[in-house]
Image (cartoon, rainbow, N blue to C red; front, top):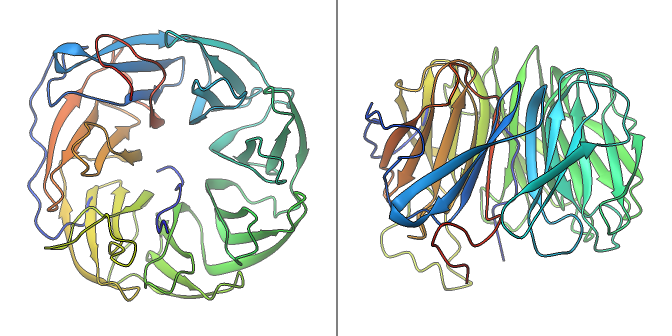
Length: 382
């Protein structure tokens, strides 16, 4: 049983952690380990796809997509190649279909111009085709996929509060993907009846700017829990009861300023055997904030045993986590609106080794995603 689910976009609370070094490397020469996942960075006027390659380097190139604010990746047309969806600023969102050599062919989705701050992907109506969910500054939207990456879109009857982050998971154990929205105001949970019809309700405290949301089983009861991070209010953990309802409390003494969160086993327990079904890992939190980034070590009961702040990543606004280099330890990529991003390799004990990733222009990035687009530059897929 998996305890960690896809989390919303956008420091770090660690039990034992070292700071990220300011080691500058030329573009496309970021040497850490042999990367096995590609990284897609979202910038305002284009995207940058950095593909894993031989020589332990990332080979980067631009993707023709403009006015970007968010990104999500998955195989949307069943050809076993990753595709990308970009949320945009006051313009139609963009769908980019992947090619066998890692290329992307992009076109606008049939949506009216809107500002999308978060994108998520999942099967909303049980037809085994992946659908799209857009968290917007206005009405949120979802788009049902016919299996060939052709979409029928409509508004979701949520509040018109701006949405900063979207997460998907089965909150009431009926086998359907439900939606959690982190809003500027009151957060919402939308329970899915399996046919992409939703009943929405508020959850957690009100905040002027809720930055992000992540889902995972924090207390080992097999029910999904939620963690909301906020720019102006304390961060919150909300423990689920398996019926789509939550009991929320503040996350320690956290003081907000947070833009994004990821959940995962970043601080592996001594003697932990991830191969045993009954030895589920304790979930930890990684939080990206305006004043740095944090790692919080989970205590297995829905709380936090310890946290530590790392202030090197000032103005971090987004991140993604995944197994970037194939060592089975979770890694993190942080992005900043102004300035270079950072690629951080975890060791499973709460320590990260980070390198700066500079872009061709002087601007930063709004979002980031990891995935494997194609066998490329010398690294074979399994």
